[in-house]
Image 1 (cartoon, rainbow, N blue to C red):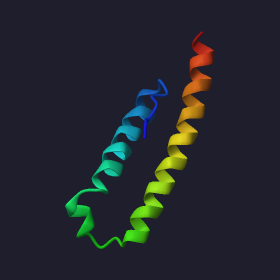
Image 2: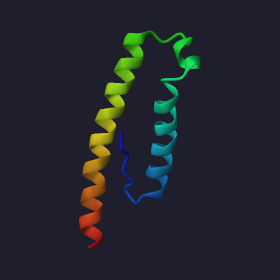
Image 3: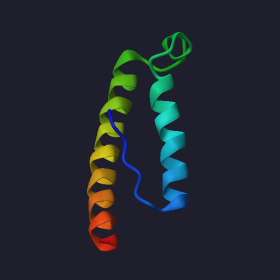
Image 4: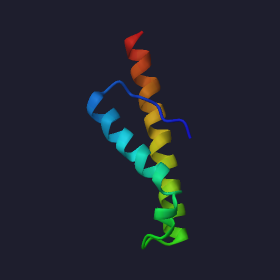
Amino acid sequence: MIWYKTGNTWLDNKMNEIMQFNSELNTPAAMNSPLTDEERETLHRRFKSINLLLTKVAKREAKKRK
């Protein structure tokens, strides 16, 4: 999944933290966490939704800068 930067420093920093958490969901440590497979899959779907929203925001902000 490609994550977009919006240009807002605060939001981009928070998104970096989310991206790191998202990538950690596939590690062996996450497999042994209290989360079930279904819960991890739900998190992946939610992260995709967040990414779609951020893509829209990034495109809108890019248009404003031009």
